[in-house]
Length: 105
Image 1: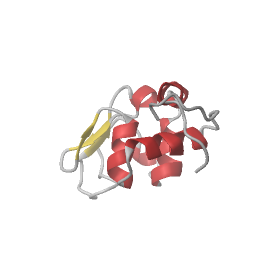
Image 2: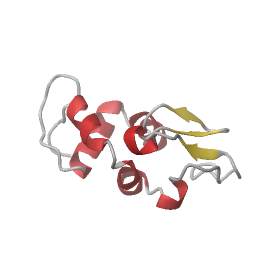
Image 3: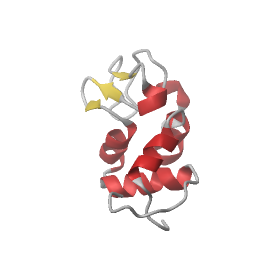
């Protein structure tokens, strides 16, 4: 990955794009990203997984077995087993953000 991305800029750019972010970075199909209970894309448990009402804006989701994540950054840290700054960089690259170092990414 080239460059480091500004956390606030990437967070703002991600709004409305969490379906494509989850698909491209974690391989999670759109069928899992609707607000109704279904099997978990991680543990495959039936009716355990749900995205939050504000998923398009935040990327927040939960599994009754695996855990709950307030936003897509936290979920991708867990799912990909990557540190926050790497997740920010992955999302920044996916969204074609301009790299910029503000000491937070």
